[in-house]
Structure formats: structure tokens, C-alpha cells
Amino acid sequence: MTVLLFILGVLFVAAGIAVSIALHEVGHLVPAKLFKVRVTQYMIGFGPTVFSRRRGETEYGVKALPLGGYVSMIGMFPPNREDHGAVRASSTGMFQQLAADARQASAEQLQPGDENRVFYRLPVIKRIIIMLGGPFMNLVIGTVLFGVLLSGFGTAQATTTLASVNECVVTAQRQAETGQTACTAEDPAAPAHEAGLLPGDTITAFDGREVTSWTELSGWIREAAGREVPLTYERDGVRHDTVITPLLTERPVAAEDGTAAVDDAGNTLTEEVGFIGVGASQELVRQPVATVLPTVGENLQGIAGVVINLPQRLVDVAQAAFSSEERDPNGPMSVVGVGRIAGEISAMDSIDVESRVATLIGLVASVNLALFVFNLIPLLPLDGGHVAGALWESLRRGVAKLFRRPDPGPFDMAKLLPLTYAMAVLLMAMGALLIYADIVKPVSLF
Image 1 (cartoon, rainbow, N blue to C red):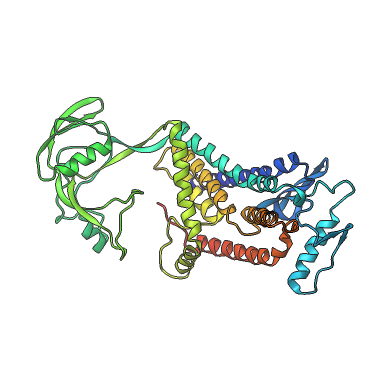
Image 2: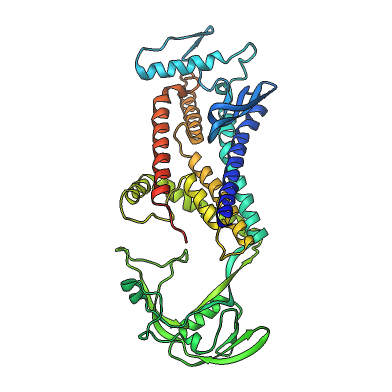
């Protein structure tokens, strides 16, 4: 059963990513057709064609390698120079020949009547809209899915009902030094255990104050170290009163993301606070729609930070993959890593089905936001590279007009093909590294 759930989780996320890629390409296709550009192909995947069907002037299909997709539009590269319909010959250098071949292939797609339907003749703003259509679609998908996640399912929040009650207190220092998790005769009894609390009890009052949230209760406990205080709890609908003395103990300092904070040397930071030895149960709490956009913004900020530091992040991944170092859970992952995490989430018996589905939806939403940010990188063959080329053309023409110089014409993107190929090789190498790392040294989130 666990294996089946693992497979279902992988298939769920794989299907979500496939649909996201298909809609990304729709984001390019729709504005291209609205602006009358002739679109010859809409394909999901690369390599040999598995299935295709022609409708009108466009061939729609699926290819063998599900590694992305593309929309093929005529006239992506302008002629070297238009002079009574002729194209000036390029020089014979290797890079120049690449550009010449691309121009020739682009010219061979033209048919009578296509003169005003080529991509490079569009106004700059329309070209930018076409190229941003794909990333924008990923942004919309990610935002909608986060809306479903936050307002439909809710986010996991700690409740005042106890999920666990420790029998003893093991200091953070001893845990770090020995890895101890079981109680020994040397360890003091946990205050909650001594007070008679059990998993499933709901704490309703602490030190004479009504408890309304776990965060509030945690703050009171931390401040009450060494002081005997009254505590009220409910068990099976019956009220019980007891007294408890929070123990002053060394506990890890919580970082903003809820994990243990560390110093520059990687050592866990600790502080002495009141502690009773309990863990809170979690429940999904629906959030207002107003929280969706701020949540999306926070995720985009985090993803942008990863992308900006991508070279160093990849170095860290390589070091972890070929050594005993642990992977950074906030670092980049391949689709293999995402699929493995999806499978682990689906197979977890410790959380209910609703929470598992919600987590998988959040995973697909995060992938879409990552696709949005990554595709905005201003380098070919990414969408951001085409946008950068269009903006450069606009700037160049604007400067020429300002100084009353001849119009330099469309910017020749074909000249950047060597950079495009180099970038494509780097992307494939990056993908291979991440896949290898996700197999031999996967990210551990649990």
C-alpha cells in the first residue's frame, strides 16, 4: 500500500507539471495567434513526435521526451539585410554560419502572404507580450493553486490539543553530543508527564488565563520556568485541573522558517527557557483570500534568491553529491527530487489524506512559481532572453531616432545563437547534476 501511495504521489505531481508546461506554451500560443503571427507547431516535449494533429495552419502534438515544450512561429530571425527581397550573404566563420543557417531555416518557412505575419515584424511591445505569456501563465497557475491551498484547504497550524507528551527532558547539548533520544535514569522527568497530561488532552487554561492559541501558550510556558502554576485541560470532554512547574532547560532557538537556528560555524543556537515536554497537534485552518498574494510574493522572493545565487547553489549541490555533506533543503532540485518528495508525502501515514493532498498542491504551485522566475532570466533560449532582445532593439531604435540616424532595423537574434547553444549545454549539465544529486544524495525534508 505504501508503494502504491508513493507512486500516486509521483504521478500527481508529474501530471501537474505536465499540465503546467502545456499551459505555459498556451501562454505563448494565444497572443501569437491574436497578433496574426503564423504558428506552425505547438508541441509538448522534444525529440520524435509521438502524436500530432493539424488544425488549420498549426500542428499540435506530443513528443517523446517530456522535458518541456515549445511553440514554433515563423520569422523568429530577421534576414541579415533586406534589399529588394534579397538577403546578404554571411561570412564563413563558424558562428556566422550558425546564424546564416538559422536565418535560412526561418526563411524557408515563409509562404506567400506571410510577409506581415512574421514574428520579427511585430512591434516590440507585442513581441514582449508573446514571450512573457508563458511565464505569466505559470504565475497565474501558481497563484490560483496557492489560493486553493490557503483558502480551500488551509495551512497547518498548531492547536492546543497535545499530540505527544515526553516522559523526560533531554537537554539540547546532550542531544547534539550523543544523539540521545530515549530517556535514561539521569534525565529529569518532563513536567507535563508528572502533571498527568496525555496525548489527546486539550489545554484550556494556564496560570489562570484562558488559552486561545498554541503560540500564546508556548510564550507563557517559556516565561514560567521554575514557578508552580495551575493548569486546566479537557480529556474526553471532561475538565481536569492540575499544577505544573515548567523546567528551566536549554532549547534550540527557532529560526523564521521554524527550523533550529545555527551560527556562522553551523552550531545550533540555544537558549534557556521554560519547558514542559509536550508537542502540539496540527490542523488545517483556512486562510482569507487576502493572504494569497503576500504568500505568493514571499515564495517568489525566496525563489529569486535561489536563482540569483544559482552558481554557488550548484557548487554546494555538487559538493554534497560527491561527499558526505548533507543537501540544503532550500536549494535547487530536479523533477526527480520533486517527484521523490511528492511520493514520500503521499506515503506518510502520520498525516491525514487532506493534508497530503494539500501539500502536493502546494508543491505544484511552488514549481510553477519557480518556472516563472527561472524563465525571466534574460538569457536565450529562455523567454527572458527574447524579452531582453526586444528591449535592446527598442533602445537601439530609440537612440537612432533621437540622434536622427537611420533606423538600424530589427535586432538580429540569430547572432546570439552561439550563446544560446552554450546556455543550452549549461542547462543540460545543470539538469544532469541535479538529477544525479537527487538520486545519490536526495534532499531530506522529513
